Amino acid sequence: MACFGDHGSERGESRGGRPGAPAGGGGGGGGAAGPRAGGRGRRGPPRALAVVPLLFMGALFVWPFAAIVGRGLDGGGFGAVGDVLGDPWVRGVVWFSAWQAALSTVVTFAIGLPCAWVFGRRSFVGRRLLWSALVVPFVMPTVVVASAFTTLSAPDGPLNRLLATLGWGSPDSPALVGPGSVWILVVAHAFFNVAVVIRVVGTAWGDIDTRLTESAAVLGASPARVLRSVTVPLLTPSIVASGAIVYLFTFTSFGVVLLLGAGRRRTIEVEIYEQVRLLDLSTAAALALVQVVVVVAVLALASRVQRQRTVASSHPAGGRRRARGALERLLVGASLTVLALLVAVPLLVLVVRSVQTTSGVALTYWEALGRSGRDTVAGVSALAAARNSLVLGAAAATVAMVVGVLAAAALVTAERRHGRRTRSASRGAFDALLMLPLGVSAVTIGLGFVVALDRPPLDLRDSVALIPLAQALVAIPFVVRTVLPAWRAVDGRWRDAASVLGASPLRVAWEVDRPLLARPLAVAASFAFAIAVGEFGATALLAGPDTPTLPVAIGRLLGRPGEMNRGQAMAASTLLMVLTAAIVMAVEWRRERTDG
Picture 1: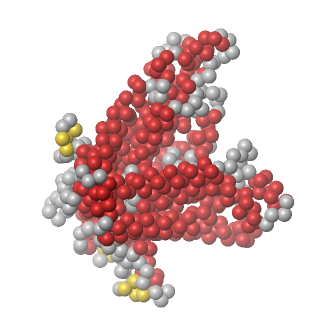
Picture 2 (picture 1 turned 180 degrees about the horizontal axis):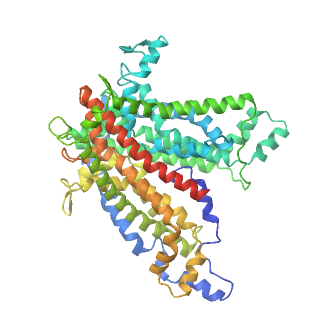
Picture 3 (picture 1 turned 135 degrees about the vertical axis):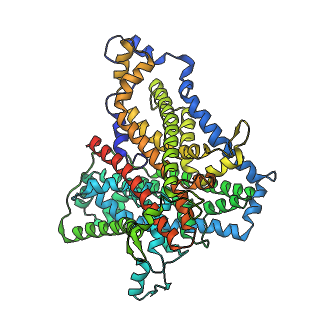
């Protein structure tokens, strides 16, 4: 996936000469003058390209976020936030968010690090297929995962039956798992985030030159010392990066905790959602401000550690080999088995439960998805909700592509004029602004829309357009990070040659850049669409009672009692899972074929 572990694309940026360098050797003076044309336009991203992204981010991110901050302070300064945090219940929510995120991160690394070694240093049958499939859990809609783990942790579910067989409790009173169990939340978080650890750390592990570890061994270092003195320092930046991502994703967890917490467990995200439902926007805004402070602090700390611990190396990658000896084969087999159980079993249980009725295997729940009336979710059939997801997702992907591609074009153009190594405060600020939605949760984005977009010129309180706009904000960082490395890798001499032949800048972009960027653009559009279709946090706040998306409909079904509602939730979750997996796997296979 382009947002993590895709170091191959980053390395490709240095290939094909220096983008923007003069083509040919003759006419040195003219070649040097070309990039300088534009005079005052050299500072930061070109205004003509950056204006749309800046307006979009300013109106739909900066302004709503500023409104949240203002509502959180509410005329009382930071004392208003202190008043909110003075509530013992709120302090408990903040504390639970922090320690469950730490526990989830530890469990995710316990599973992910051995698998990262397997994928990074060992070769085995089906490795490329599994490497691509790892992306699917990461982008899987939270309601799908919550549905799967709801079935697993049910009193009569497979997990509690297994625990009862082992002597831990009984199916009626499980010892370790059940509604509101911390452990089921932790395992669900590990399901989502283990791919981050494997792909980020596994890629870095595969890039370590084996000559470094072999030299240490020749000098008498034991395997444990080689690991401690050579491998760990080289892996520290990737471990810190993936650890920060996993911690933040679990700290800001919403759908998993909302649907699996049984009302007893709440993260800050869930509490914000509940306070909005109670129309207590001041408390919700103060909590959102606290959460953003924590997010920024974690990102700053991770960045500092990475800068201090990064070890430069110009050695080639060490490559992968097959496992040798019984111990290595056992480690590879055990790691892949645990990974398969974590990823495959919940999804398989979900599929089975969607066709398992009280009278046997049947398609009863699937047939009920097309029904409409008072017995359905707000009178809207699940299939109608699925249509809403596809239509709104397509709109969100379109907006994300327009804004993201224009932003990437602005950054690339500025870099070609000045050189990528030339520092620019405005360029750095522009790039950071585009990435900020990754550090601010979807629920906070939805809350910002509710707080800010309630008066002219952007009075959108009753407009369904709020949903694709919020989904687009979530998807834009993925679009930029997918398109930008590929655009940087385009050889600038081709563009210079087209300009010399009289092509205008627009024609150069159409005739040179567009064909070379066709695949990255398709990948970005597909991922943006998949992210928008499965988005739950912001959509849950913004969707009206008669315009639910499929994730929102699943959440509502899971919140209702009755076997039919539960069965429909399983069937709808399976439908959403298949749709998301098909999109992501098609994208990843295409990337693998292109890279290979």
